Image: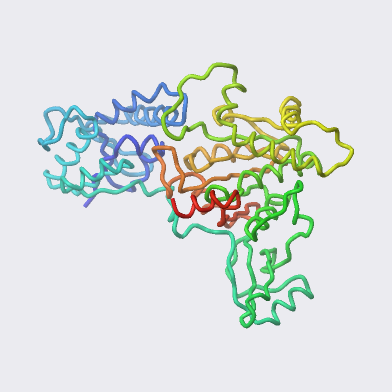
Length: 439
């Protein structure tokens, strides 16, 4: 028996290809969904683009038959638009609310003896559907299990002789281990827990040592083994995409910027640094901001300025012949010379970005499609770094399992040009660490 999937508007706005994700079943769109898409179609953000894409898909299907009666889609399955007025059974809900009209369609089909599943990313809508006796589900495509998210490292107990052999030969075979490319392994002695070796997966199922020259980057020394692993990935030119996940204060942005400054200003591997972050406020939006693009961005990019100022003040100690100018002046020079460029993600679509060190901060607020769009902008010789905390999401349409950062970590973990590490300990301050652990 075919299932009837009644799809909420937020599913289509989250993933414009979701219409074809229900196999050879019947996808039902209440007319209220079409009306809600119409409200979003003029938006200049990802929601607007998805709304327009879905509307174009429906218009193409309209050429094949009457949508009200159901049209077979190219990938299998049938799409039907359901008129609510005069056809729906009274649910007792306020029908002036669009979500309740959508639920009324699912309830009516259920009472007609159909196998109905209501699909929505809105928790409240799923709760109301469950109260009506309708089977519910979140949209599972492009979701990952955050509790089992790839961490980029593991610890293995081995005989002490294995560790001694590693230090002598600078490598050890790992045929028995199913390691991901660039995964880090801490070898620990079975009998002496202080006897360890920090290694990284290499070609040919071998564990190799970390690069000694990456111990300190731009005068910043790692404070934990996870930060040391992050520097290894950030500084290795063979790794073109790095994902850093961690709670507030673990140093994700600082480490990425330190590596960017080292690679661009000292090693000349890239032409410039491009830094971007989603413009999504925490709490109530401040509304319209005056000024040109750079002046508007300055408010959103203040965390980047804070880290750059700290790094330039610290980095000034590296060269004695440098003039005595403030860290802020140095940051201003980098911006004026376009060595460091701050950009809103709104303007990245359509660009090709060659030979740049790209940092996308707060990437947990991006959808999987947005992350795909950003990474696909990378030109020849470009390195991309995505940082964020999946447990601090301000985007109302995303959660810990459906955000683009977590999705990228899990989907790309087997790629040789990708490296990932989860930073565990807050290093910002004792107070920041207490807040992250207990609040």
